[in-house]
Image 1: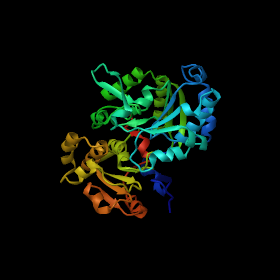
Image 2: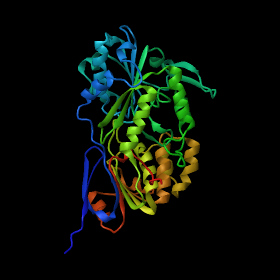
Image 3: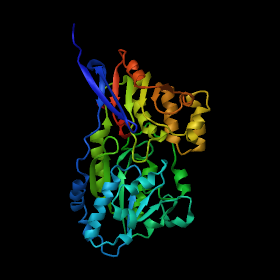
Image 4: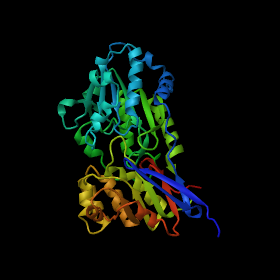
Length: 413
């Protein structure tokens, strides 16, 4: 009896899922795992705050009496621990807590804003000024200026009236703008609802993350108009952990953040697989259908046509407008034009699901209703045992942990 070498697979998914199996090594084209998380966020923050990239120490940029606004990206991991470390530094600089505003964007998940507030020190919870931006409130907005393209830019007054702004952002791949971070949480998230709707669009499959895109250019211009200088850029690890934190000038920190992101989250196998097994974990902003957008783009890039995409999730969320539209169609691609016309909030995820459903066989483990899942041209999976049965073939397999953070393409010569 001959022994076959196997690859031991372990995939965290959803909030509590933990899938384990073994696959013969000759069938595994790629097994991409999450980077190691930071063991001590407080220590890393102390190092980062004391040595900013391409800017003088922060204590030279602020003085007692300054109005400080910390702008928090809802996708940024370990944001509570980061805010605690920033406040400890600001306190040594003589900043009063009454002059500190923590500005959050509205998030899909219930309680998302309060979860961040509950994760910081009691002092910050009780005495800092906590604000959740309301893009539909004209009273909360002020005029920043007009872009070179003639677009009037409005932002939260808590940004316009601040003496110092510090963004805390996740650096990640984004189907619309290439790379998220570097001020992308600022606009349109802290602008008007009109700006948010206007920015929606379908992903650019012909572009790589580093290619130029009009919305990314506008985001950069808005950051320049606002005079952003310092920023904290966070590289995600698996789950809701951080792999690294970069502090310094907005441009330098984002540039280094993109380099680190590509090093740990870019997936580039040499060949497409007949099956791709991907796990999606709950993030700081929850576990939603919107997480599927970039995951499915990576899956389409790495799986053969008519192959199989197997998604491990614990999603149990209502369908957004885009998902409902897709569920009403007879064929996946029938949804593309209506999605483009309506521009729903879940446009990217619904579009990617339609494209993936046309390209490959999509199977989903979730906590959603099976009949509704089938309406999305997806085969619902009831439990992990079904996944193990799917893996008992001779198909080649690519496996990706924490796939919500990845960008995948075949290795370029």
